[in-house]
Length: 387
Ligand SMILES: NC(=O)c1ccc[n+]([C@@H]2O[C@H](COP(=O)([O-])OP(=O)(O)OC[C@H]3O[C@@H](n4cnc5c(N)ncnc54)[C@H](O)[C@@H]3O)[C@@H](O)[C@H]2O)c1
Image 1 (cartoon, rainbow, N blue to C red):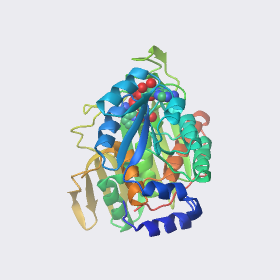
Image 2 (tube, helix red, strand yellow; image 1 turned 60 degrees about the vertical axis):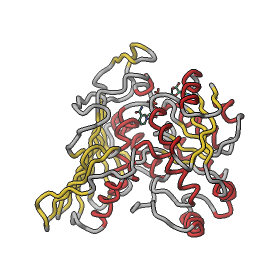
Image 3 (cartoon, rainbow, N blue to C red; image 1 turned 45 degrees about the horizontal axis):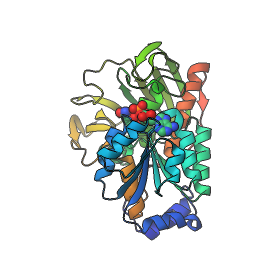
């Protein structure tokens, strides 16, 4: 995060026109008078077991309410993390004790409608990916947030890692010469607990590819167009919450992105990748992202959501050197905590709704290209370079 004064922040957001107009910052400014951001968490499943420990340790967060349509889950997490209120429905959550920000951790297909309801009720939103089911729905959410003088942000938080910062700086400083190509990959054998990952609106792209898409667009700039192939390798699965199900969303995808100026990148993701390092990626010492240029190449070691370092070989130093072996405080589940800190301190975070929306448009375009075999032009953009 870049440290700027509150006044600079207010000016820059108004000037950039990306966040909100100065005159519309009332709610935000009120929030800044507080010492903690009051939060309501919706969705108390698997990912909440990663978010809640992080949020509960943040000095900038007060957990007010938990909610899940499976009431025992909300009750259990509320007890475990000393959250005073728990509910079984978003209507009850929003009608309960006031909070500033809703943290959305439900099934992906529910995000758009729940995020909209929270904005309508005057709450800022941090959403797990994707922010909405379609780019159009996501763009409407951002417009609604602006109209309501609120903010919305979406996962992933990969741009926060010191390895991302190192790579962005190396590219900007020309260490790789003229950048030409990049490749990124992420896959495992697929979640076993919930059906939504395999139902319409799910798939390996919004669950896994989303990280690499955010990293590569963050490093190389917004994509202008996309081509993709998508397939289903395992047509039937057995999951904990629904038993045997038919897989409707892609579980095997290759995406090509054109970033302009001749730069092309490739992302592959899937739910049929045997990975000896498991879901956690512990011990993964290989590069999962590589960027090539005319003077050097650079690889991110480990996954972008849990990186271990950056390997760099250049014209001037052909022997590969390892940089940034330590992730510092960065963890992938930090998104909502970092946003709370940003709101309290008046710092504009690196994570931007426009970037998350751009990635959502890529995901939608990849599905469309996979179905039609055509190259799909993109319309969205975000403020770049990030660092
Ligand atoms: N599990 C992970 O490791 C992980 C990691 C990163 C991101 N994510 C993302 O987090 C989100 C949730 O994934 P998960 O693995 O925790 O799924 P999950 O199935 O374990 O949890 C989702 C929870 O949301 C609840 N829910 C669904 N609809 C709801 C509604 N309308 N109102 C309230 N509660 C509702 C479900 O009952 C369930 O408890 C997804 O977007 C996923 O891509 C998951």
